[in-house]
Image (cartoon, rainbow, N blue to C red; front, side, top):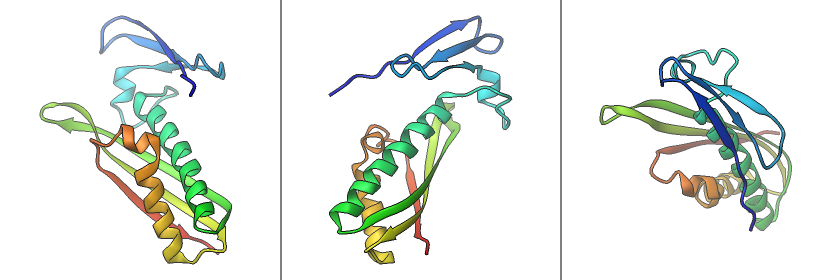
Length: 145
């Protein structure tokens, strides 16, 4: 199995410094990071570890759900997955305090109950979910017509 790489170049202190994170394996881009913007409500044109985790989790979950739907005898037409990763405080330190996965799916061959079962299996089986097992992950899944 492959290994993927990202690299960050950081200059300065936590509060006054900044950096650039490069998606080295795919070479699709270099993005600005900053702790003050990471901790703010508005990102201000920078990304954060939480946003990158959200991207990883939403894409991994979509793939896992597509697989689970197929195993259940359905065919996914469209899956819209959002991952909200929250940065908060735990035991007096910054921590990822929760992840909410939201999925809306258009699926042929499965009813709402079977879709829920597939979504729960995908949540548990997704490799990113497994890597984040110490964090509470909630799921809001619904089938759309």
